Image 1: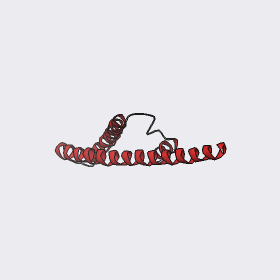
Image 2: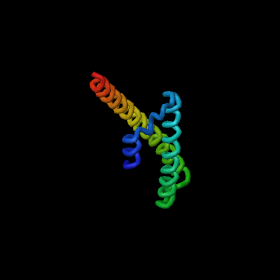
Image 3: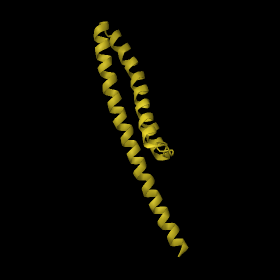
Image 4: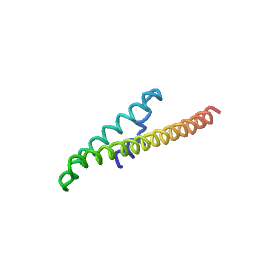
Length: 101
C-alpha cells in the first residue's frame, strides 16, 4: 500500500506513455503480482491438506480474481494521477499568468 501511495504521489503511472502502453503495463503488473500471490496461496492450500485438483481450481480462481481486482486498482491509480497532474498544471499555469501581469 505504501509503495502504491508513493507511486501515485510521484506520478509514476503516466511517464509520457501512450494510453495503450499504460494499460498494457498495468495489466502485466497485475498478472505478475497476482501470480506471485497465487503461488503463495497454492502452497498454503497444499500444506493445509488440499488435493492437487482443489489447489489447482482454487489457485486458478484466485489468480483470475486477483488479476482483475489489481488491474482495476491500477487503472484507478492512473486516473487519480492524471487528474492530479491536470490540477497541478492548471494551478501553475494560472500562477504563471499572474506573474506576467
